[in-house]
Amino acid sequence: MSNSTAASYYMPYYSGPVTDGNGNPTTGFTRFQLALFNRTGKELGTDATYNVEQITLALNTAKRAETDAQSALAQAAAAQGVASSALSQSAQAETDALDAKDSANKAEDDAQSALLAAQDVLIFTMLTSSAQWAKAAQSLDDAALMAAQSQIWPSLLLQSSPA
Image (cartoon, rainbow, N blue to C red; front, side, top):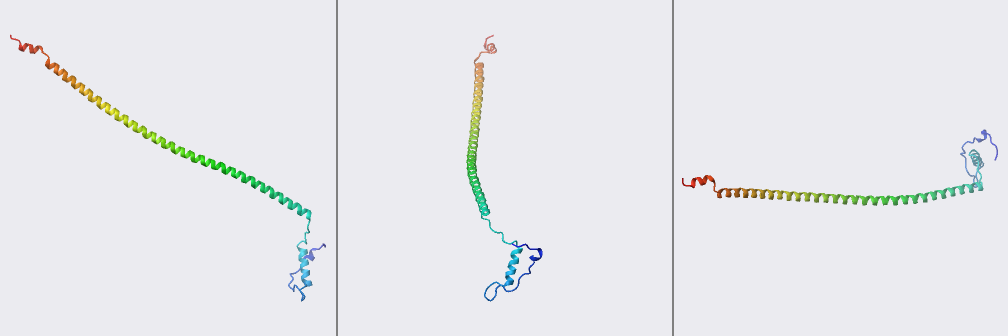
């Protein structure tokens, strides 16, 4: 490597022939490549220890990422299991609620039927009772009338006695 000043960085774009008649690079093209090489910072060189450290770091990072991904996958599977269980419990609760609603509707219908039957019995009892009271009252009236007709009243005695 050589030290260069700012003035030595300038190199116009090479527009001449790249190779000579034998296929070898021309002097002008070689100078252009050298100037381009110098302007772009020259070659970095290779450091095997640095490359090994970088590769090891990349491998360790990849292993941690794989471990994290496996852990996340296991957690996702567990969460999916919990969600599936919650979904089935929710479906069962919905089914139970619908069954309870059906049972409540049936119980309400049965209660309405029982109330209607009790109402019919009460109406029948009241009508029967009223009819029996009316019949009993009529019988009492008839008995009183018959008793009154079969009695000998004092006024009748006066009319039938000879005076």
